[in-house]
Each structure stands twice: as structure tokens, then as C-alpha cells.
Figure 1 (cartoon, rainbow over the protein chains, first blue to last red):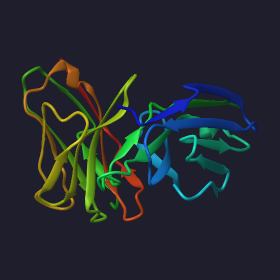
Figure 2: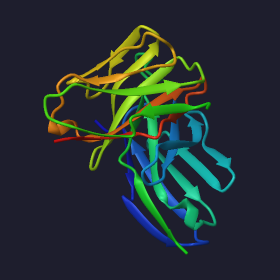
Figure 3: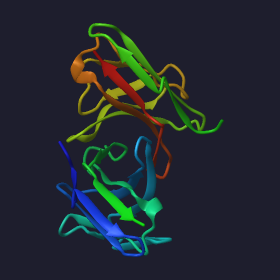
Length: 114
Length: 111
């Protein structure tokens, strides 16, 4: 079963614009992670935000976490054509010590047009 | 080369055949994982391992077998391949800080 669900499923923007993707999850978590996957490649870790954090930045990435709403958002500022990829949120389980397993959403396909 | 590698990258096999997908990591990470990625399902965990000789089932383990005799290797075997196992398979290992590093994937087609 999917723990995280990304929204929208697909997003198309112009270079230079900002892109926002959302993730909702169902159960308590220790942390939430975002990954990027370029077509035909493996996933690449982008950023991790812990359950006691509300916002985190890494370069052009900004992640927010609202544990009361069980949701997170990933903002990519000043997007580039090279940002074209699928983006996945992943959550761990916060029960039974299973925080080493991640459950991935189905992803948001971001297309950045030059 | 440092990192996580998978072999083969592409494989076509027939229904009923046994297939083994290899995964090798050079970081000595304790945790390793096998996922399959299918359209409409995202990534689903097949098996994972917390250390050599310690493995456990994930979300979709049926039809798969794993072993881990050495920390760096985590092979996945399809004992009798079925068409429903046509997928892209990813191996990953985990750091102490929770992020996972993924291999390049194996695209498996079962005819």
C-alpha cells in the first residue's frame, strides 16, 4: 500500500518558473524524504526532513512538512530543463522500529520546457 | 568503482526460468533493499536485509528469493519467472542517516 501520494501526477512549466509538488501520507513518520528519478535511471536522494522540522532548504530546493496535516511539499525555484524528472516522496514507518524501510509514492512527473 | 551496481542491466527470459539479479555495493552499508517499479504502482519493496544473513520480506515478496552471505552483495532470484514479474528492479543501500542510494536498475522482461 502506498504511504505517500504525490500531487499533481504531472506538472509542466517553463524554465525559470517555480515548481511545487505535494505529498500526503497516512501514518506517523520519523522522517520524510524526497527523491528524483531521471528517465531510465535510479532514484537520487534530494533531501530529508525530520518529523520535528517544519522547513528545510538545500540549494534551489525547499521542503516543508506539516505533520498535523500529514503532508509535505517540495518547491524547486528557478527551474531548469535539467530538473525534468519524476519526483517521489518517501516515508518511513514510525511503529515497530521499522524506520529503515521506506514507502514511496507514485511520483510527480515534472517537465521543464526550455 | 565506488557505489552500487546492478547486473545485468537488461534481461529477457522465458516464463518458468530461474533468473538472478545481482547487486553489489562498495560502501559496506548494513541495510540493502530490492524494489520493483511498475507503471501505476510506483516503487514497491520486495525484500530487504539489515546485515549479512539477515533478510526479511517487504510488500511484494511472493515469487522471489534473496540471500546475503556478504555485506556487499544482495542477489535477488526469481525462482520460476512469470510475466507479472516483468518490471524494472532497483537495488538500494542505506546510510546511517536514512537516505538510500539506488543502483541503475535492471529491466527484466519475461516472455
